[in-house]
Each structure stands twice: as C-alpha cells, then as structure tokens.
Length: 477
Image (cartoon, rainbow, N blue to C red; front, side):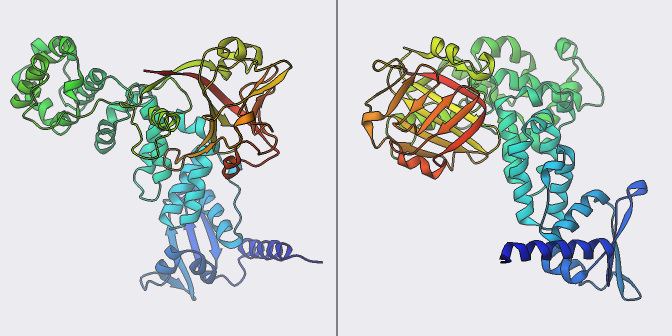
C-alpha cells in the first residue's frame, strides 16, 4: 500500500528535478556578483504560489522580458543561498544542519527579504538550539545583522540576553568602539545588563572619545580644552540620561566622575550630589531609575529566572517577585561541567546543604529543565535508592528562547514519593522516577507518576543528553 507520505516524497522529488533542468521556465534570476554570479531558470507559477515577495515582484511592469522570459537580478543574495531557498520553495525541504553560522545568518536575511516567514522563524530557532557557540563568539556581528529586520526578534532577543549576561562580549570587544548608536542605546536601557554602573559609564566615555576626530587621552582630563569637553558632550548628550547615576557610590562619583563634571547637565550634577548627601530627598531631574540586575552566578539562567523560581517557592499565583524583591538567594554548589559530571563529587558538594534547585540544559533540543527540593539532600532510608514525603517540591521548564514568558511548573501530586536520594545518581524526583540525572550525562524520565504536569514538556521513557546542570542552595534572606 502506498501511503500519503510516499506521494508527497515523490511530488517533492519531481519538483526538485524541475528546478534542476529548468524545463519550460519563464523566469531567469541572476544571483550574486563576480565569481559568485549564477543564473537560475525557474517558474513564476511556483514562485508566486510559495512567496508573496515573488508574487508582488513578478507582477511589476518594469521587469525586463526577453522572448516571454522575465529576467531580474538579486546581486545582494549569494548564489548558494538563493539555491537553497529555491530548493525549499520547490520541494518544501531544507537541511539547516549542513550550514555553518555565517551562512545561516545570510540565509536568515534572505528569508526576510523574500518574506518567507515560517522559514525565517525556523532558522532563528535552529540557530539558538544548534549554533549557540557561534552566536556567543559572534554576538556583536549577529546582533548588528538581525536588529535591522523586524521579523528576527527571536534571535535578536537571544543575542541581547547573551550579551546582557556577559557584557564583556560587547564592552570588551574592539568592535565596541564602532558600535551602531541605536544598539548602544538599546543596551544602556536594559535593566538586566549585568554590569556595575560605574563600569558602564567608563566604557561609554571611551566610546565617546573614539568618535571624536581629534583623539584625546581619557587619563589626562586636566589637559582637556573647553572645546574638547563641548565636542564630547555633544556626542554623549543623548546617552547621559541613560546612565543610572544614583547607583554609583559617592566615593566613586567624587573620585572618578567629578573630573568630567562639564559633560553633565548642571541640574543632574546637583541632584547626584544632593542624593549622595541626602538620599531621602527626591531628585529634581525625575524618578530614580532602578538598579540594574546584578550578574547571575549561573551559566544557564539569569536573575529574572531566579526571581520566578523564588515566586514559585513561595507559591505566589501572581504579582511575581523581581530580582530586587525576591526573598531568596541562590548559592552555586555544583556545576557539572566543572566537575566532569561526577556523581560522587555531586554528593560531596550538595548533600546536607538544605533546600536546593537543580537546573539543566539538554544537548539536542531547546529545553532547560529543573527541580526544587525543599528538603536536605540525604539518604531517606536504607538502600541505594530511597524516597521521602514532601508537598512543596516541583519540577519546571524554561523553553528556549522565550524562557520567561513560556515557563511551566509541575507541582508534586503524589507527596509520598516526592523526592529521591540515589547514591549512584544525581538529583531525582518522583516514584518513577519522573526525573533523574544518571551517570553518563543523561537526564531520564522513566515514567510520569508523582508530577503529572511534566507531561507538558517531557514524555515518559525520554533520555536527554545533557550539556550542563547546576545545583544551587536556596537561602531565605
């Protein structure tokens, strides 16, 4: 019996042949430039059916026709990139795994231009799941590429999140000094930029100096002329209000910022001095901006995630904590990659430490899965594997990239076997086990019993290969 999927495979294969041989083509697209230039003989009916861009473009009267064949050029799209997209349009097939980060970015930009929305979203998700290392190493270039396009918000937000967690990727790069103004402003507005405010100001000052035609030394401010100050003030004018001056210590302000007094508006300078002398008097220049999110000691999640976990621990149904109001601190006890995923070391560092949070990242999909054990991690009886009763434990899921807005929590429904202690394994939850980390960098869901809510993000019988997992001690402030 021939199934429907066989027919679709045959159809896709036949259309691939049509693209290759170009029989009865009525469009010629010239892609690329120079040695990369190549012509593609294609069919307007297929292009217009599959792409709104081609539907609009091929209907325009200004397109050149030769013997009934439309000819137009796309020099801004490399020929190998257009070939991939044409194959996708003809067959519905695309293999992103064979492409490296740079070509994936080029492909993404081309899908934006050709208005291939579903493929655009798919490429962004694929890059986040499979090209994280490339994005981290090329965070600035990736961001400067995707920020130009409205539909690339998934990857843009991911790049922003990476840089906010590790600001040196941006501020410590030589590319920082030629950074686009709009991107710099965007980062200065972020509440979760994990940098001290004084450091942000000092980097901004160096960026401003790099924009000046006549180079001057930041360390010799006493030798600056009035014209030097005026030129720099003009460059930094729109950025000065984005610095959170009231969160710089009085000592640092007096020693390290006062020499640049001429760059600050008079009223702002007076307000800062006033706040340092009398913190209870509100400034005249507007509300005091909130302190930025402090650096997280996790390589997997940020302070916003910890604030949400803190809200879950206290069973808040709404009005969740933020990073300033959360009543818990999270102290890193164990990072698997730093300890060779060794189970013995895990127990040495994490046993008898009180309530703990586990957070893990799987290797081949977009999952951050963790669990909360409100009890001491210790043997709960005799034997290699033991369980104890608990009504406050839970398992949670942060999907990548929309990790906060789409977070899921599964509270224990069978408290008798809520948490487990396994001598030869890592953190374990449920009678099944619903979730357990075993030797060999594997997280396993044997069966779902104590935490039925986890069925929304993991299925029974699943083994996940782990890139990382971390254990944090939960301390009530």
